[in-house]
Length: 257
Ligand SMILES: [Zn+2]
Image (cartoon, rainbow, N blue to C red; front, side):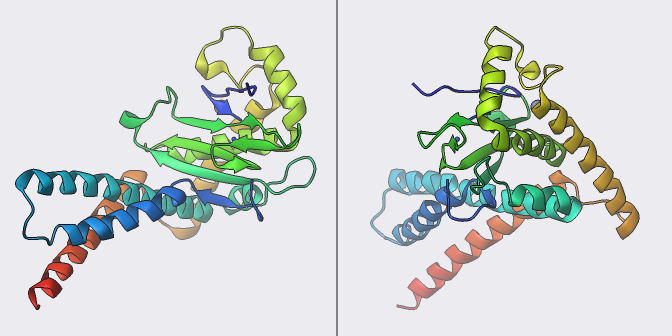
């Protein structure tokens, strides 16, 4: 069984041709868009029972939720890049100890449907490549980061970027440190944050740098960066309009025949 690490409740251990920060919903998005297109056509059938129609609507709601999650994650990553370009670009070019590029897959997740007990988690796992390669649910040479959708979501993301920035180039050594330090029971919030843990120190430093960048952004632009709640509302409205318009236009086009 693979040796799993857990930081910040979970710094869990989780590869590709060129490294970058990626949207963690990008793989689900393809199936969701296909499903919405298919179900939209099914809804136009005149022989559907009420039960079938309700089932289709329920399935469409799930797919729409994936599209909304993808778009919210895109918008928040863009916001992170705007406020803290240095942190973003540094992580966007992350390499492991052997110089291999490592992608970071980020998801912003609703707190109520998340299994995390803290607001952010970075996932690391030993790869079968070698001791310096990281593995996540997205494959070899990748890291996964989940963050709750909350007011402080980008600050939490900066914190998790700090953990990831330290752990990936120091993976084998950090794994040994982690096993020796956190093998006995410890409260989830302490994992990754013992006094001797360099990944925890860098996580706090990245969190502070983000807050300073946010203040600089406000001074430079003369306005506060948009709040996470505002961005989430804009995304929800856009997704609702997109699918309502798509459905109405297919009904209109079906009615012409
Ligand atoms: Zn942490």
